[in-house]
Length: 338
Length: 222
Image (tube, rainbow over the protein chains, first blue to last red):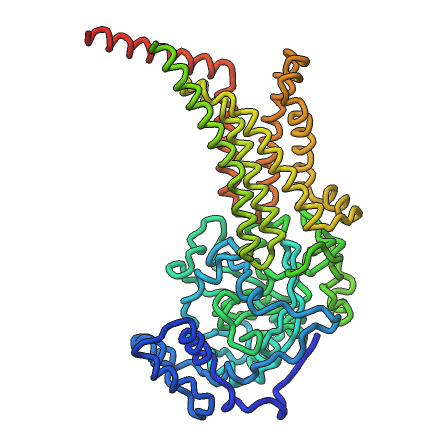
C-alpha cells in the first residue's frame, strides 16, 4: 500500500481552488452564462484567500446547511501522490470510481447509483460510537475530518463479483477512533451500521434485503493499520455514490465488507450478523477475506477483471495484502470461515 | 375477386411481420455498437456487452417459444413463419454472447475458461443451453425438416429445455435480487402450460365456442 501523510511540501490550501468553485467554473464553461456570469467570474479568481460563500452557486435554502461543511477540508490534498499501487498497478480513473458503484441502498444497477445518489445530503452528519466502550461518543463529521490527520492510501478493491479497481482513498485508520473511545475488555467485535433513510434511498424499499446495511469486524481486524475510515478519494471529499461522508475500507476483504455512509459504530461481544449473512448465509460469511482458493458457491473467485482492462488477472490471496494480514488468521480454517 | 385481395393482404402482412422481426432482432446489436462507439457502456464495458447480449438472447428465445402458444390462444396463424427466424436470431445473439465471454472477458485464456465453466454453475448451465441450441440451429432448414420428419418435432422440443436452462443461468448469476429472472421464469412456465395437451385442447374448445357464439350473434343480427 502507499501511504502519504500531510507534509510540508504540499500546496497550501489557500492556493487551491475549492471544489465547489471548481465545479461552478465548469458549470460556467458548459454554458451557464448570462446574468450570473460576472458573479461567477469573480468567484473563479484563484487568488482569493477567503473561501467564497457557497451561496454563489446554490439556492439560498441549502446555503445555510452547506456552510456547515468545511470546504477547506476538500482542498487539503488535490493531487494523488502516485498513479499506481505498490504492485505497479495503475490507479483507476476518478470517472470510473465515481460511476461504477455497488450501493444497493440506491439501486442494484452499478452505473445508475451516481445519478440517484447525486443529491443525497451528507452534511450535517453524526456518527455514534458506543457499546462496550469506556467513552461513548457522538462525532460530528466535520470534527472527524479535522480531528485525525487525513492520509492517502492507494488500495486495491476486489468485489465479490470478481471485478476490481485501484482507488486512492483519503482517510484515517479506524484504530484512531477506537483508541479514543477505549473498548472494554469484553469487546470482541465492531459492528457498523449504514444510515437508514428509505425516503431518499429508494433501494432500501426493496424487500430482498433486511435493511439497514450492517457489517462487522473482529476487534483485531478493526485495529489493524490497513483498516481505514475513508472520508475522501482522489484528494476530494467522498461523493455520495462512494459512501459519503464516512465509509470503511478493508482492502483484504471483499468490497461488501467496506460499509458505506456509516452512522453507527458499536463495540460488541458477539459476532455481528451482516446484511449479506442474513440474505444468503451459505454464500456470504462474516470474514469475507479475498481468497482465490475458496469459491463463491455459484462462481469462481480465482480470477478477476480489473476495471479498464480486457481479459482477467489471477486474484491474489488476501487481495495482495497477505504479508500484512495473514497472521490475523493463523489457525483459522479459511474454507469454513469464508 | 375478394378472395384474391384477402390473399394479397395476408401476404403483405406476413412480409411486414418478417421485416419487423429482422429489424427488431438487429436493433439491440445496433444499439450496442452505437453505445460502444459513444463510450456509453460504463466503467466495465465487457460486462455490459456480455450482459446485454445475454438479455437479448433470452428475450428472443422467449419470443421464439411464444409463437406457438400465441397461435393456440389467439389463433393468429400468420406469425408461424416467424418462429424459425426468431430462433435463429436468438442463436446468433447467443453466439455473440459466448464470443464476448471467451474473447472480451477471458481473452481466449483456455485454462481460465475451462475453470470458469467447471467452477461456475451458471456458466455450466449456460454452456449446456448453447450445446442444446446448436443442433436446433443446424437442423432449422426445410431440408432437415423433411429429412427428420417426426423426429424433427421431438428434437426441437429441446428449445424449451434451453429456455429453462437460460432462466436458471440468469437466476444463478444475480446477487439476491431475483425479481427479473423470476419474471422470465413465470413467462416460460405459462408458455409451457399452453403447450400441455389437455390445456391446449381446452383453450381450443373455448375458442371454437366463442367463434360459434360470435357467428350466432352475427346471424341473429341479420
